[in-house]
Image (cartoon, rainbow, N blue to C red; front, side):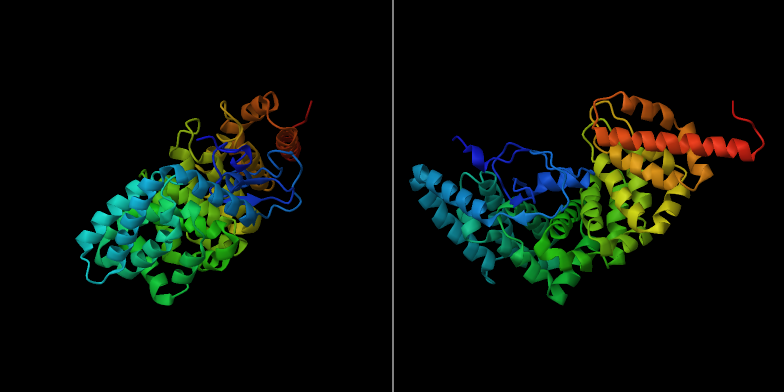
Length: 395
C-alpha cells in the first residue's frame, strides 16, 4: 500500500504517528522532531530556518486525515476486519470483566500484541476501542498484584501509544492512588517493567498536555534515583532511562531535582561506558547534561568532582560518523572550563585540542564551527594568562 507523500514525516519518511507542527509551519512526527531539538539543533530540518520559538503544536487535522485514510484503506480487508472487530470486542470484554481470571487476561494481551504489530494499516479498531486507555487503567489498577500482567500490558500499551492521545493516561495518573501505584511499580517491577515505565515518563514529559504530570514526576526523588540507577548500569533499560532523563530535563522546573538525585553522574557514567559510534543515545545524554549545566550551578560541580566527567564530554566533541552531540559537548566544555583551571587542564590532556581541530575540518555546520573556535580561543587565552601569572613569558 502506497503512503501518500503528505502523510510521511520528512525525517523518518514513514507514516506519521503523532504529527506536530513547528512555528515554521512544517509538520514532523513528534518523536523525531523532539530528538532533533534535544540534540541542540535550533533550526527547522526542512527549511533550515532558525527557530525563535521551539514549541510544537499537535496537528489534529492531519492526524484525523490519516485516520480517515487508514479506515478507507482497510475496506479491502473488510471481511477480515469484521472478524477482528468481533474478536477485539470480545478481548475488551474479557479485560474489563471482574469475572475473568488474570491468566485469561494475559492470554488476551498476547493476542492484542499480535494485532498491534499491524498498526496503523490494519486493526485500527484497537484505537477506536481505546485499548490504550483500557490497558493503562488496568496496569495501575492491578499494579504489583500481578507483575507478569503489568509487564505485558505495558508492552501492548506502548505499541498503541503513538496512535492514541495522552488524555486517558493523564486522567488516570492525576488520581493519587494510581500515581502511587506508578511509583511502586517502578520500585518493585522487573527490568522490563522499568524500561516500559521510562518510556511512559518520556512520553508524559514530552507532551504539552501532560506537562503538569511531568513536573510531578520530576518531584519524586525515588523515581529519579531509580531512573539514574538504570542509566548508569549496563542493562537493557539504560537507554530508556536516558530518554526519560532527557525528556524530564526539558521541563525547567525538574532540572534542580534531577541534579540533586545524581542525573549528571548517571549520564557521565553512561557516556563513559557507551560506544559512541554505534547508534547510541550519547548525543541525547550530552544534550541533557547541557540542559542541566545551563540551569543548575551545582551541575558543574558534579562534573568536576567526577574523575571521568570532563573526559566523557571531550570524547563527544568529534565523532567520525556524524556530528550529533558535538555542539552540546562544546557548549558544556565552555561552561565547565570558563572558570576552572583543572577542567581546562583535564580537557587538554584528554585531547580536546585535537578533537576541536578535527571538528573544524569536518562537514559540520557553521554554527558548530563558530562555537568550536570560541572554545579554542578560551583555552588559548586562559593558558597564556596562566603562563603570565606564573612568571613565564609568551613568545
